[in-house]
Amino acid sequence: MVLSLRVTVLGSSGTYAGPGQACSGYLLRSGAATVLMDAGPGTLANLQEHVALDELDAIVVSHAHPDHWLEVPVLRNALKYVVQVEGIDLYATSETLDLAEKLCYHQVRPTFRPHIISDRSEFSIRDLSFRCSKTDHPPETLAMRVDANSASFGYSADTGPKWSVDELGSDLDLAIVEATYLEREAPSDSVHLTAWQAGTMARNAGVKRLVVTHVQPTGSPAAAEVEATEAFGEPVQAAKPGQTHEV
Image 1 (cartoon, rainbow, N blue to C red):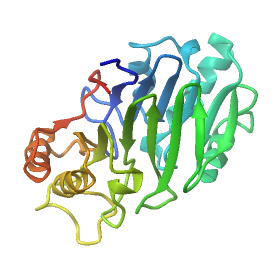
Image 2: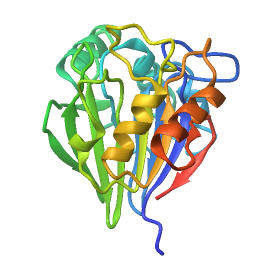
Image 3: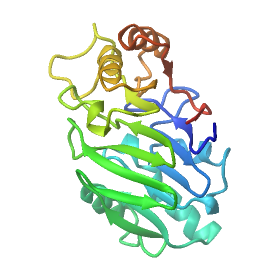
Image 4: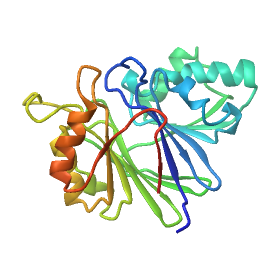
């Protein structure tokens, strides 16, 4: 089997980073592309353990909540003033790009080339093809399917239970799905998933391998693994910084 996509966890804490953790961030590497998907606080340091900053082809951000993108202005400073690289594509929702412009003193360009993405947006970064799906989460939040040759990967970003993984297709080789709560803890009006819901929707969508993420620092990734595994019917891992999944 030829491996065409590697997904490395840079951070997986929900809301804020716990000790030894970082907020949401994933490094996607294929034969031709190096992409940062979400850039929560703490992910920039972890990113540099795997690639040099001038190796990045693009950054893709799911939504405007700060635990998913606040390293972008810091990364812009590093690229502009130290690494001296320009023209890196930045794909994000309109709201996220507006906030980035403000925090970068309206100088996102020329370091980044901003692109607005929304529900059903499709775009390519070298040999990676992306398709977006709006989730059940405020503000506008985009789950993403990524295809690389014969490999398929899905990322739920943040979502409540009114969205489902099958919106990304029924043939995902790997899905990383948020599991902020355990079933017994979830608020009745939650805009996040439980580990049970993550496992159930991944099973119903025919996902081959499931990783759960976005567990809050006050929660238990081990307990999320157990609950999601029971619902999914196959072993489930909790995302941890440094973990690489080959698709």
